[in-house]
Image 1: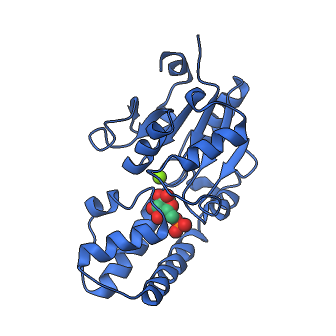
Image 2: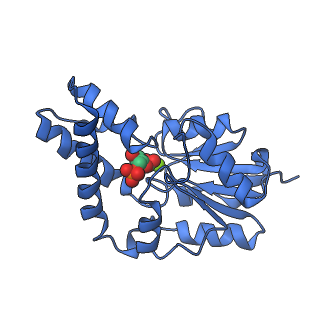
Length: 216
Ligand code: G6P
Ligand code: MG
């Protein structure tokens, strides 16, 4: 029997490569502060809130800052991120993702978006996919960011399904942890080692086959 009745997608790194733009903006901030951020450092920034990411970035450089300075730094990073993103075209959506969403819906599966980003609505509008989801939860609607399960539990509630009926697509370790903490199934998108707690791993989101839904 097919127990999955809803799929919940993370945005950055799952639907579009905005994870790279977040990285470029954090890297630029670190560079300005006098040190370099590596792609390995970036793994810990994926899925977590802007302020938590900033704490991690500052810690990596051994930088201390007042609350006011932190706010200025976070704003600066966000401005850079938006500069990269505003040039984005709908074609930048990962190949096959729009089709996967449509196929899921035509198979009676509800589709939700759960992104810790406060810019999520801007990004999905730029990609022209704002009307593809049955429910959307972003960083402006939650108190605790991933790995806390709040975002996924709220999305399930909005979709009108039980957590155990949900399958989450995530590229972040914190996101996989959040999905599991919510009692959901999880497909990890990307590095198998990094995301080894996920129920299944795919290299790209669209590699997921709908026929797998009944096997999870
Ligand atoms: C997503 C990304 C994180 C980002 C967070 C907050 O979860 O994976 O890398 O830090 O959103 O994004 P925001 O756009 O609100 O700064
Ligand atoms: Mg992500």
